[in-house]
Image (cartoon, helix red, strand yellow):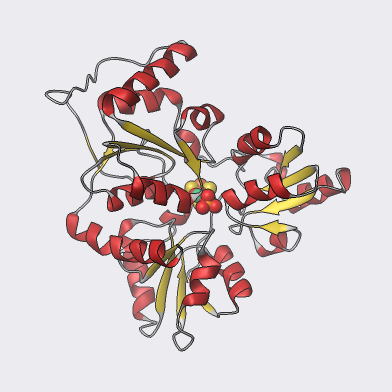
Length: 331
Ligand code: 13P
Ligand code: SF4
C-alpha cells in the first residue's frame, strides 16, 4: 500500500530539507531532543519499535493507550513511531495537529488484507450486522465501521453490544476467533491475518517449553488458535508486559513481536524472556513495517516536518465516529 503525505519544500515553515542526520549516535539523540523542543512535538512509540526509538519516546504503549495519548496531547506535532494506521488514527483524532510518520512505507499486512471496496461488499452481504473493526485497518475501513476496537478492549466492547444483533468482525480472523470464544458472541469474520503473528513456529515453541519447563507462555491474540491453545496468558502488548511484571514466574516465552522484550527486560531485569522464531528459524517474527522507522528517520521527519499524514475531511469525520465510540465505551 502506498500512502499519500505532504511534501515540504522547507520554504517558510522552518524546515530545512537539505540537512542530514548527525552520524554520531549521541549527537543524533541530542538533535532529536532539540528538534522535539523546537517543534513542541510529542514522540509516541509502539512496543514493536527498535529499542533506541523506545528509549527516546515520550510515551510507549499498546494501540489503545497510544490512541488515548494522541487524543489527549497538547503538543503541536505528534511523531508516531509505529505504522501508518496508528499515525492515521492520531490524525483523525487531531485534524489541526501535524502528525508525522518517520517512514511513510510503514504499513501493516492486516490493513492491506482488507481493501475498503471489498469490505464494503462484505458488509452489503450482511446488512443486519453491527460492524466491529480492529484498529489495524485503513481510515476507509474505519469509516464503514460502527465500532473500532483494539486487542486490549475487543472482548469487553463486543460483550457490550446488543444481544439481538449479529456482528461482523474484521480484519483479523485470529483475534476475531479469540474474541468470539472469550465473549461467547458468534462473529462473522473477515479472513485477514498479521504476517508476523502467523509466522511463529509451533515446533520452536514446543522446544523452548522443553528447555524451560517453568516458563510462562505469553501470547498476543493475533496468533493462530493452535498456538493460543499453548499459551498461559493472552493479551495486548501492554497486558503481556504487565503480566510479566506481576506473575510469579521467573521466565517467559513470548509469542508476539520481539520489540516488547525490551520493555519487559527493563521492567523486570531479574526475569528471563525468550522470543519465538518463525518457521525455519527465520527472524520474520520482527514486523518489517514497524522496523522501517529508525532514529535517523525520526530526526529527519522532525527536521523536515514530513512525511505528514493528510486526509480528506469528509473521510476523517466518518472514521472518527467509531473511534470516539470505542474511547467512550472503553473508559
Ligand atoms: P497492541 O499493541 O494493541 O496489542 O497491537 C499489536 C499490533 O499488532 C500493533 O500492530
Ligand atoms: Fe501489522 Fe502485524 Fe506489523 Fe502489527 S505486527 S503492524 S498487525 S503486520
